[in-house]
Length: 491
Ligand code: ARG
Image (cartoon, rainbow, N blue to C red):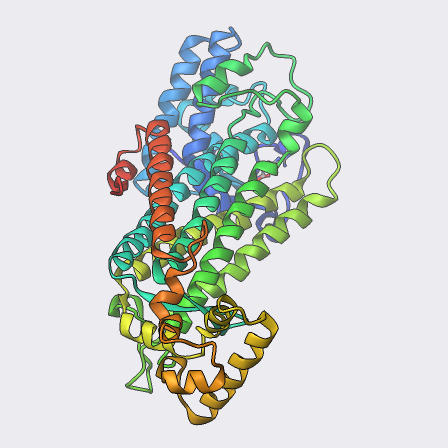
């Protein structure tokens, strides 16, 4: 195999050293176990750099060709799982460079001309962050589509459930209204993810260690070759800036926070006490001891994992906060948490998408819950106000009625006209309509309110937003066929 290293005990920077670091310190200093996954980006960056060096007359065309061919070969090996990673390789950049030199000889040793691992790692990480942010946007679209599908169905039957404040029944709302509140959270998250995607889109390559280099590099050449839309104007900033990772991890943490809130509701709703939904068997688990149990494990896990992703954001901020310019080894700690945040969000989005797409809606249970809790009390008071009673007095009359009903274990909907009129002569025959839960919903007809007309308008707005966002991404990524196939125009 061509990956045998010339002197695998000595690091690539071994020139000025007589001893190698101790084995334990080598392991302590290594980032290969984390950054190996940047290999595609590293190879792309090296090819762009070699081609640029040849164009600028720093390398011969033959050397650049040999380098690119060697890099292709190594890529093939890594892809096939046949690449021999070495303990002496501190990171993916050294692993690939060393394998290249072992493979093609002297020309391999010329690749790193005018380059440092400082601009190299920044370049690789930016490419990776840019790509993964796109991936996460597509996963967000999947999740948003699942919510819209349920929202559309629920509006056909005007499914009603209690709306809560303080987790106490407050006023009834349409299920579609509630689901769209979830939808808008994730729509905003997609915008945040897009901002992170764009923040990564600038090339640090050519900044070298920190100050630029004496070789006549063409930074625009490598930036264009790698698909970056611009070149970072300050070499110190180029190697030390990790804001693009903060942006990405922040977008991940905020999305996780939203998923966690959604999952908290899924957990509550699937409990026997609520019974609003039944999770499908494929998105729930059983108990090893209690045969009757069906647990919303995956919803709980998303809720739990959100804590770790918020931790990833905190960790990255703290890592960065005390660093002087320019590169410091602390920056090597940037990737583990960022990768964790990305991976965790990707899986969590799949879990939430799956739970929502396959859950059963128990509309009867929702409606029954909406009949309880005296949620029409405000409307009954408003009815009296409409008949000329002062609001404070109306509030007291209805409050007294609720107290009596509560003692009897009855609902507002079970009141008779006689009982109402005994409480206040201002109640007429149409007073019973005021407590009808569907009427309570229908009366909230302000923009953004829960009346059918408003929710239908809002649903249309959400569908338009979905189609517009998807179209933007479809145009930006014609090459991502696998993702394209998942997008669906919602009608
Ligand atoms: N593995 C390093 C990192 O991830 C690469 C850059 C190392 N540069 C250096 N001067 N030690 O940050």
